[in-house]
Length: 230
Image (cartoon, rainbow, N blue to C red):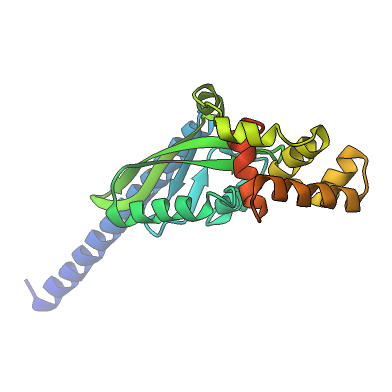
């Protein structure tokens, strides 16, 4: 057999092998895409809120239950958009716990207040597991469950806070509840049908009577007295 003919045969064989490998890789990737699509469609049907994040801690998926709870579109929650729903008082601890879990690559659980579609905050419990892919850490898949009612059942008002709060006048308690629930002084005035100046005056007297200097401390008194949800 002529050497030139053998070279041609070898080149043809190499080309066929490369084409076969390319087709296998295409089928493998298509199968992976189909599997991922089916998996996400399955999660969308789940009644529990479910999320997924990549190894860089940015979220890549939220199912329909999560989106309905939040009242937002999927693209608004993806990436770091979900953090906009964390209660300001819980934000630092929540994000610290979340990011530490990605460094440790271990299952984790945390609780924080998340804003729902109505604008109110509800306590949720996050449970998450590392997600392997081809033997590598691919991020986390987790669930979120509304536990507000469970927390409320086990809540016992603090006696000292109750005594301090109920030493306020009825109108002052009304102002305290509205401000502690996240309303501004202006919104509080509108809801109670009083002037801004009057509402602000009530707010100042509440701070004085409770012996505190900032709104956050007022909120803690209202929570400990059971006037608003934790």
